[in-house]
Length: 294
Picture 1 (cartoon, rainbow, N blue to C red):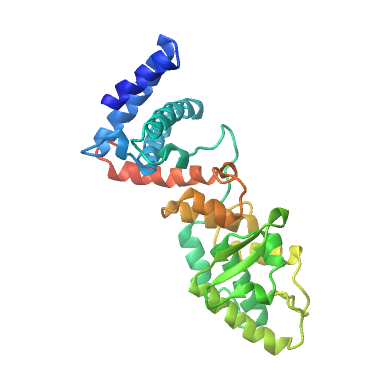
Picture 2: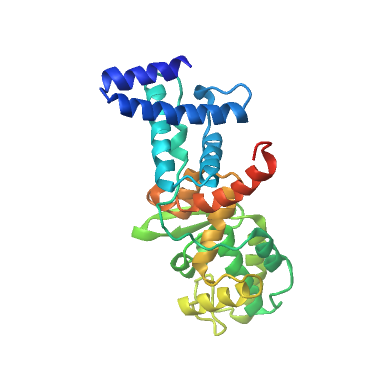
C-alpha cells in the first residue's frame, strides 16, 4: 500500500525514529491490514471505519493479547490515520472512536436487555399511585441514563411530552436535554393522572413520596433495588446500574460513543470509555459466531 510506505518513510526520515521503532509500527500495521483484508474484500486504509477497528481489538483481546499490547497497536494505528488525515486522504481519524478500559479497571454491572424487557413488560408494578410512580422512576432511569441527583430534581415543567425531551441539571450546573421514548411518556402520563387524583395541591417536583412530598435519595434507591431484585442476580442493584445499563445497551446497538457521552452528560470521552468493554464482550460473541475463521 503506497500510503503505508509513505507513512513508514515519514517515521524514518522526518520523525527520525529508530529502525527498531519503525519495524514495530510496520508489524502492528501489517497485522491490522491482514485482519482487514480477511474481513473486507476490497479493504483499504482510507475507507476503514471504527467498527472494523473495534472488531480487530476484540479479536486481539480474544486471542489473549494484553490490554497494554492492544493499546500499543492502537497507538500505531492512530498514528497512520493521523498521517492520512494530515495528507488529506481521510476526513476523520476513526481510531478516536475506539477506546478500551484501563488495565484492571472494574467493569460496571448492567442488566441484560431481556431482563429489562421482562421487568417493564410484565405486571411487577401495581396499578395504584405507588406502583405507577415506581414504574415511571425505573423507566426514566433506563430510558434516559440520567443520574439519581438529576431524577430527584426534575420538575413538572422540565418534561416536554410533545417533543419527548426532559431537561436536567447535571454536574457543575450544566444543563442538558435528554430524549426519551414514547413508552416513557405513557408511563409518566399514567403516573401523573394518579398523582393529580392523590395530591391535587402538591409541589412541582415530578416524583413524589406516598405522602405527596418531593422524593428523596434513599427512597429512590429502595424503589430501584426492589424491582431489580425481581429480574437480576447482580450484586449491586442501584440507580447507577440502570445508568450503566442504558449506556451499554445503546453502545451494543451501534450508538456513537460521542453521542452517548453527550446523553450521559460526561465532560470527556475518557469517562465514557469504560462502556466500550462491556460492548466488546457482546461483540466477541457475535464475532465468534459469525466469522468463518473464529
